[in-house]
Length: 124
Image (tube, rainbow, N blue to C red; front, side, top):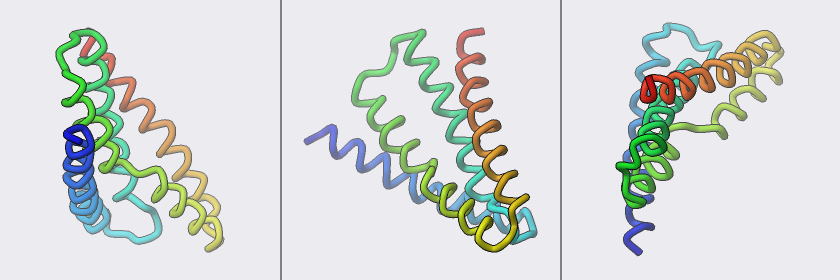
């Protein structure tokens, strides 16, 4: 039961953080044709999960409960594949094919690069 609570608490914090940071990124970007909020939280989340995963793998300092809270709960609630997918479909349906393609390229390439960078920084 404690593990479920940890995942839920982390998910709550991650989801609220995603909502707040995503809104700020969207407003700061000054445009409404590209989902900068989702892109921002996914890049940050992938970088942090790379750091946490790298530390957990190389240093073995995280207990299972901490990993559940941080990775499954907080970062799982913070990053969002479903929003990315929906926003890409909506861009494509609204005849913004280039924006849809750029969204896929940025989300996948930059987010994977951010996760890799997090692992790299921990190990070097």
